Image 1: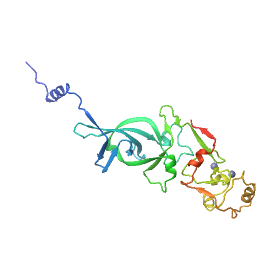
Image 2: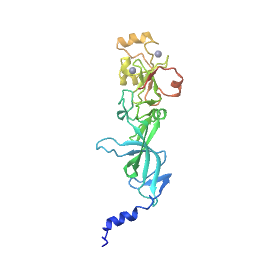
Image 3: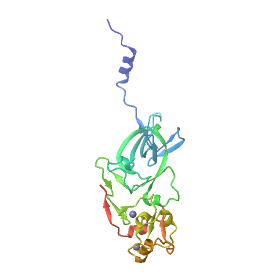
Image 4: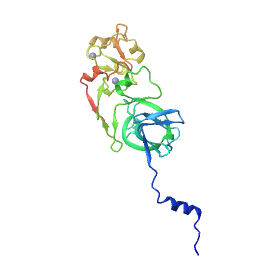
Length: 246
Ligand SMILES: [Zn+2]
Ligand SMILES: [Zn+2]
């Protein structure tokens, strides 16, 4: 006697020979849940899998849906935050710094929380104000080895640190080197009020003035905050020492 198969098994059997539905590649896609359209190359914020953690930053590499145009999936290239890298966050890493990794994933479009901007280092330093959705990237990051590209970066100041765009620096009018106020024995507030600034090496008198706690004779200093920070064209031509990033 022929045993009747349960309905569920029949359904599975019927589906088996069927070919996987073809997926469509799209150049852009409207995300209804945030009412924004994303395109290849856009930077996006994606919901973190761990509650309380900041959103992931990713670059949209490709967009695909099923044949009916639903179930959108995004091929992303992750940006890593400094704390997600092997070396961790270092003093010269900016608060909004991310590294373009070689780590790709396929994610549901539903996990996208919004769009954001990942600026080049120099365009980030030229922003008038930094919004929540502004980030910058100056390094590519190899997620397997922890290596950075470029693997060297120019250093500034007596402390010989790479430039952190969040930190204010003052520029010596003579040698054009940049300094952190704290490294030259002053405060950020006092540095902002400087009209002229010559570093210790360029001005031995200045050293004496600092020792006597008098800054009243210093006038017209170039104080960098975003717009005139190291990293501009002028500074690229200067020869700076570099440190190796490992
Ligand atoms: Zn310094
Ligand atoms: Zn100098």
